[in-house]
Image (tube, helix red, strand yellow):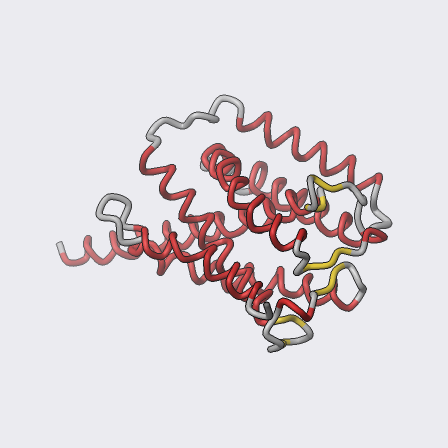
Length: 235
């Protein structure tokens, strides 16, 4: 029973790791571009996670964790910010490989505007709830940067990957909140749930995944530039 959260982490990342060696997608070749972003975004989200545990936003059921802690966070929670983004970037890359057309290109900007507006409204309505405040505020900032500062062209592809990632999201978060492994304090969120999953989790997950994809694309682009520069010097 104490291995429950650890097992959920293991199963989350198992198939993406195994399928990384598929001869078509060859996802393993992209690992070097994933881990720098996982480390940076992981530090950010673990910081919020630590504060959330301190302020009672959520807690962890001791019956379902092995009891190893880092800064008040169970080992499994630290691993969560590696396994879940890794699995979702795998989905993102598979969709990029198998779906050549940019299906959401024509509506991507409207999706972004709608999300920005929704985050702004919910932020104003629930600013006194810690989880709601951080979640909607963080996603709002990331979306504004992605759309208006960095002007990212892959947002449409990210949205498609996010929609597909909702399938494992509902499985993993459903298990974590229904067993329950993670215990949420409804005084610090909207107290509205989709099944057993707090509504904010959808936006918290989007913020985390979008930040990781942004870092992934950045480090991939930088690695490509370094390679091309080295190749040009040889010629």
